[in-house]
Image (tube, rainbow, N blue to C red):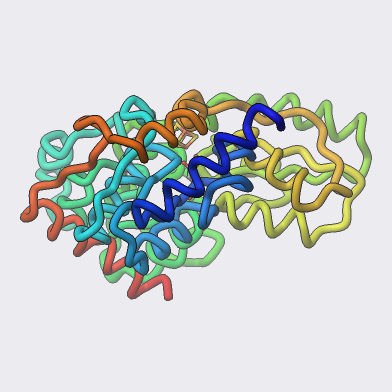
Amino acid sequence: CREIAPLTLEINELKKEKGAVLLAHSYVEPEIIYGVADYSGDSYMLSLKAKEAAAETIVFSGVVFMAETAKILSPQAQVVVPDRASGCSLADSLTGEQLRELKKLYPEAAVVCYINSTAEVKAECDVCVTSSNVYKIVASLPQKQVLFVPDRLMAENIRVEMKKMGIEKEIVSSDGTCIVHDNFDPETIAEARSKFPGLKVVSHPECTLNITERSDYVGSTGGMMQYVKATQAPYFMMLTECGLVERIEVEAPEKRFISGCKLCPYMKMNSLEKIRDVLLEPRPEQIIELDEELRLKALGSIDRMFEIAE
Ligand code: 13P
Ligand code: SF4
């Protein structure tokens, strides 16, 4: 605490001086969320905050595709990232060119992109979705066939949900997965349930079906947090990134967790030092720049998401 307090104060002063707002995803370290962030939450909530932001500078503490989304929504602001290497295995799995090729195979399909995608990919889509609105948006589309990119595992979860909802859809997808959520083992759930009666298992729709089908709740990071806070249970197992568990431990210290979460190496590239440095003087690669034509095309798919999700 003695080490981070001066840095926290310095960042908060710099934010005022530079007219900056700091958006942080719930997976980043608690000292960022509680010490310097103006808003923290899931991808959908942070997109809304980026859209409303009137700040000169937006510092996005999360991963690069989230900062790109903020730039698409707030082009007047300088959007910067603490570490340009903070990618995402999903966003990095598909280029705009690859999607253009894929679209040729499914000319009748509605093209839906998960927000964990590049601006180039968003520009090729009809509508963007996040984990908090994906089922509602896919269900609302008039087309029977849906090309969903870039998350193959979320596409599997969509197929199952559409069936449960009694909606006939053919979901085709590209082959990306999240390196964190693709790696949980269903056997740990069975083991944990036998050791901890009453345990509630919580997971993200980026997980494999053999995890989500064994979970008590599946949802976005915001949804998972709400569920745990509102649910009485002796123990919870969170099959997601560990930052969310740390966040709930701060906000609801009475909750008990058994281990299960994993770390996202990209989210963990964020630090107070890097945030201070980017506020002092961003290096060119830390500033998000987008071609205006591409930005407007990508904005179309995000605006359509807001229209349907609201
Ligand atoms: P959320 O939209 O649920 O916050 O998910 C973002 C993410 O990257 C999960 O891995
Ligand atoms: Fe991407 Fe997975 Fe990390 Fe989320 S947890 S940012 S989907 S790599």
